[in-house]
Image (cartoon, rainbow, N blue to C red; front, side, top):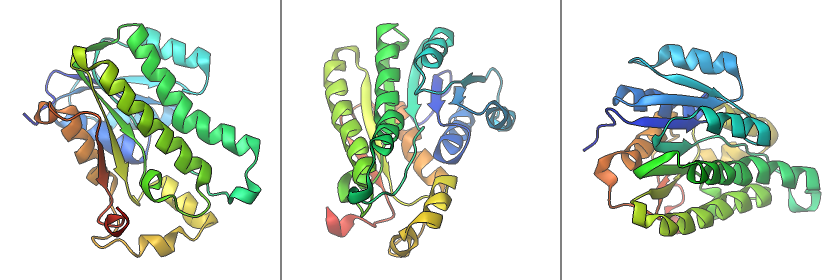
Length: 244
């Protein structure tokens, strides 16, 4: 029930952080992994770490329509897809620019939505496929200076719920994983530009590692979660429990 043996899984954002940990865990569980990302050198390094044979690289900038189309062309029929690519920037609302707005929406909302649309339109998803979208606790808690980032993640969550309903007849499941603070390069960048470390210190169970989130993603990809859809799995070490 918890095996991914024989399944083909696309993982976007696989070159680092949660995406990399997810690609590694999926391969360890027997999946054929297509590692998606923008940086070919880093993707090749991840591919070299994956156990098993037949893994592929899917290099593409998902915010570029032409590159997205080329990625869709090369993809086989998928049993699952993990939408792990994302970006976070902290900007107070009084300083929000249209450039910041478009960047956050393009990476965190438009790219995964249009990848989903392409997979469905080109019939690249097998019946009973599982789609897992990495959102963030920001969608629930809306920390200071994350107005646009929080909005993009909340919009994605809402769209995923509709998607799951529309394709329930094909037994295609769509869920979100909502991580708290995870030791990733993204968090390191935020530490340089914000007071995020103050919040990190409030996590009851301590800071998460990427594999902690990858384990939740793997569960949602596996047959063990075959009745789970339209849900959001919060993995935050208890940080937001008093807020929900």
